[in-house]
Image (cartoon, rainbow, N blue to C red; front, top):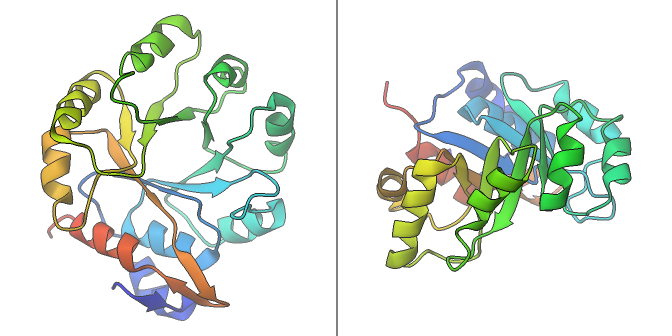
Length: 222
């Protein structure tokens, strides 16, 4: 299933939704083909970048167009900016199941909105107490912590991640390669993983290679 896909090629996949071995969130989805593929593969949450001006921004009209064609998956709005009023205004135009934010100080005001929150944090092995601090000092708690980075964790970091995952609901957004993802998940035991959406090569053609290969490895055996 890895490779370049056209929307018509997804019909057989959508008709037989897969089941995955772990909870999976896909971030920065920008197109219908990607969203339908993820839904058909049994992904739990599909995330859309709602920061206007971002390279991956999804407008309200495009979001509604995508939403009409997918089912059985939760939808998350992803924000990186820190303006609570802009976020609340955006929520009037999107029907969301989750909010993803990157600023801890937004937890309490957005907690009153009534939508579960995913808090995305940059992984720092020297600041592992930040999760405990957030849960102790913030009136509103995220449903998931999404830990992200741009490199593989070292051995000592894996031990720290394993401990954190036993204490907090964590989506791991880094550190897994195709050949060892199942071993890593078994060792660390996170609440799930977070992958990034596919790149558009040209209109109608999308590169699903890396994401598809990982999802295929996570398919449950019949």
